[in-house]
Image 1 (cartoon, helix red, strand yellow):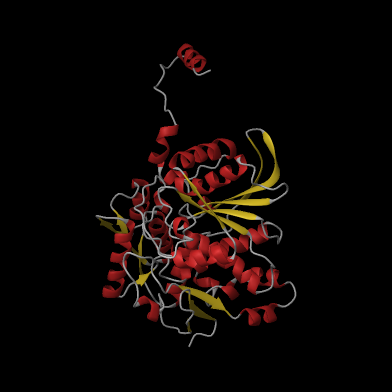
Image 2 (cartoon, helix red, strand yellow):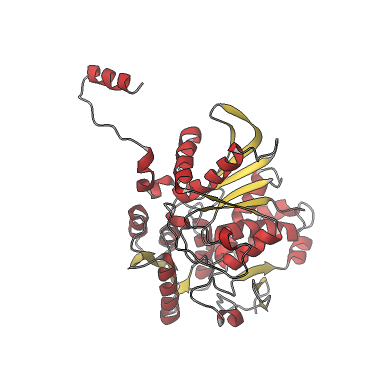
Length: 416
C-alpha cells in the first residue's frame, strides 16, 4: 500500500491507494468512447496536512529546499536525471515597441530545458518513477516534443524509449528523437491514432506509458513550473498566466501546482489562467460550456497543440470552470506574427505552440485588458528551432551578393 499519495478520479471521485502502476480509474475507463475525451484521468493527491505539520515555519522554503520531494510521487531526487530539468529563466520585459509597459510582464522560457521544451518536466518525473521501480522501457505517443523529450531523458537515464508519432510530424522533432537513440514508430494517421496505438502496445508488451492524460505523473512533472514561478516572484502569486493549450495537460499541470500550494496553506488564491488555443484546434475552449462534447478536425500550424480529441479535457474544464479561468482562440496568422514580435522584441525564438500563448497576451495588450501594475506571465513551452518551416512566410532570406564592398553597399542601400 502506498502511503505518500492517493489517486483521485477526475470524473467519479473514487480514490485509489496502491503501489501498482495505475493509469486511468478502472471504473470510468470501462465507459470510454474512442471518439470522446477519456473518462477516468487520475489526479495525484498528497496528505497536505501532514506535509504542512512536518515543515511548519517557513513552509514553502522548507519544501523548496528539499527539491519539492514532499509533493512529488518519488522516493528520492537521486532517481532524477542528471540533466538540468526545470528552473528555467523568468525574464522581466519592461517595454514593447519602445513603449514602457504600465504592468509587469514576465516570460517563462522553458525552451531552456535539455530537449528544448516544457515536456522535459513530465518526462523527468516519469523516468525517475520508472527508475525507482526497475522499469527500463517507456513508450509514448507524440507530435514531436514529448517524444524528443522522452528520448533525451531516457538516453541520460540509460532507459529505452519507444515513440509513436504521426508520420507528418516536423522533421526537426523526428530528427531529435532518432539522434537520442529512441525507437520511432511512424503512424500513418493523426496524433490520436498514435496515442491509441501506443496504449495497445503498452498493454500487449507491458511497457511503461508516458502519455499525457493517461499517466497521472505527467501532470506532477508539469506542475513544478508553478512552484518555480511562485519562488521567482518572491513568493507572490501572479495575477495572470497565459498558457498554450492542446490536450489540456500543461494547463492542468499549472493549475495543479498552485492547487498544491493552496492546499498547503502557502497561498490564498490561484491566479487567473488564460487558456489560449489556435482557432484551428480549439476543441477544449469550444466545449467548455457545452453539455455534450463535439470534436472538430484540427488544422493549425502549431502542431504541438493540434489535437482532435483533447485527452485531458475533463480535468482541464474542471480546473478552468472552478477557478474562473479565461479562454481565448487566436488565428495561425496571429501566432506566426506573435512569434516574430517575440523574437524581434525580446530575443526569444519560440515554436508556434509556445507563440500561441504570446499571441494571447498580445490580444489582451492591444485591447487594453491588462490592469496597471498587474503581474502577467507568458509560458513559453518550446524552441522555434523545432519547427523552422512554420515561420518561413514571415522571413526573407536574400540572394547572395558578390564578394566586394561595393555590392555590399548597394545591397544595404536597397534595404533602407
